[in-house]
Amino acid sequence: MLDHPTHQRLRDLKLDGMADAFAELKQQPDAATLSHAEWLGLLIDREATNRSTKRYQTRMRAAKLRHVGAAIEDVDYRTPRQLDRDMFRQLAQGDWIAKGQNLIITGPCGVGKTWLACALGQKACRDGRSVLYRRLPRLFAELELAHGDGSFPRLFRQLVRANLLILDDWGPDRLTAPQRRDLMEIVEDRYGTGSIMLTSQLPVDAWHDVVGEPTFADAILDRIVHNAHRLPLDGASMRKQQT
Image 1: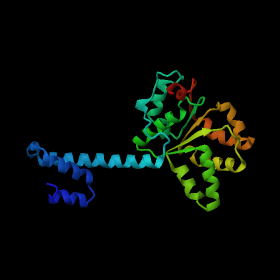
Image 2: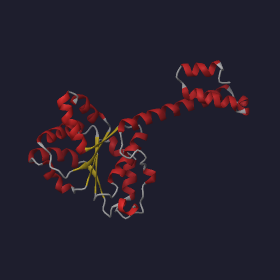
Image 3: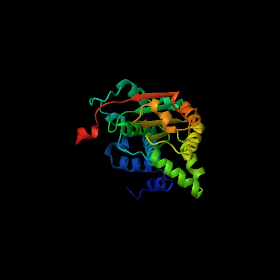
Image 4: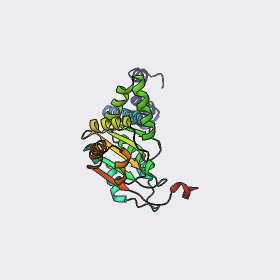
C-alpha cells in the first residue's frame, strides 16, 4: 500500500497531510464505499489541517514563549489573586490585538503574571497572529549587543513586526539613556499598528520613575498606557503555595 503511486506522488508534491490521509483510508475496509468526491474532501481536509498545524508550530517557535505549555484553558481561577475571569476570557478573544491596543498585567512576584501572558500569547498564535516574547532585562542586553555588531536593524524589525510583543518583567531598575531611546523607537513604530503586553511588579503610577527622563517618560508611557487594558493581580506567591 505504501508503494501506491498516488501515495508517493503526494509525498513528492509535499502534500504530506493528503498522503497520510490516503494511507489511512486505504487501510479502512469501508473506504471503497466512499465516492470520489468524499475521498477528495477527506484528503483536502487533512491537508488543510496539517498546514494549519505547521503554521501554528512555526509561530510558536518564533514566539519563544517562556512557558510554552501555558494555555488559557488551564488558567486557575480558584487561587485568590483577584484575576477577573470575565475580563481575561474577553482578552483571550484577541480583539484588542486586532485593534493594536496594549495590555498591562501588574502584581506581586509569583502571582502568575508571566504564565498568564504566555497563555494569551499561545492563544494569539493559535489565532494566526505572530507573537514575540522577551524579558526586558535580556532584551536591553540584546539591543546593546546588536548596536555593536550591526544586527540592530534585523532585531528591530522582529520587534516591530510581530502582531503582539510581550515585554516581561518591566522595572524596577531605572532605564539608561540608550535603553530609553531604544524603547522609544520600539513603542513609536508599534503605536497603532501592533500590540504590546507588559508585565510588571510595579504599579503603573511608578513607571514614570523607571523611565527616568521626564520627556522620554511622557512620550513612552503615553503610547503604552493610554490605550491599554489593565489586568491587576494581587495575592500570595503561587510558587510558595505549590511548594
